[in-house]
Image 1 (cartoon, helix red, strand yellow):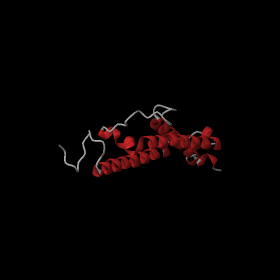
Image 2 (tube, rainbow, N blue to C red):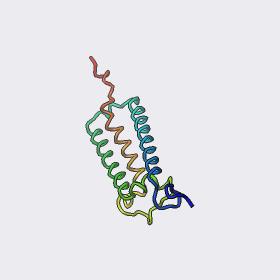
Image 3 (cartoon, one colour):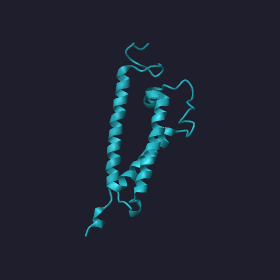
Image 4 (spheres, rainbow, N blue to C red):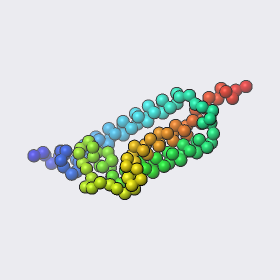
Amino acid sequence: MAPASSCSVCCATICEPCEEFGLSSIAKQAALSSHSYNTALSTQPTSPYLDTPLVKLGGGALFAAGNVLVLTSMWALGVTGTYLGDYFGILMPSMVTGFPFSVVPDPMYVGSSMCFVGVALWSVLCRIDISRYSL
């Protein structure tokens, strides 16, 4: 039998040290991923066809809609179901079928992908090569 201060894969709750380690590790990985994405994005060439306010508006709309999917799925699953369920084998008592899972079967992946594309389109106007506008 495990001591009271530790958790096991089969228990329903997670002890604080494991939860803090899991969340801080995920936060560090997310920061590194965001930095790598922004670095890669800033070095890509752009197209003059993307140099329009409509593209920027579309990027903002994709980002907003993607965040709605991600944040509402996090709300539906809770912190434990969102971040720690796979790592520690903690499953929801029943399958979540409400919004956003009623719209798409995997709202975290779809929403995150929408956010990545939205940021890429939004930031196009920040990366336009100004040398073509020189005298």
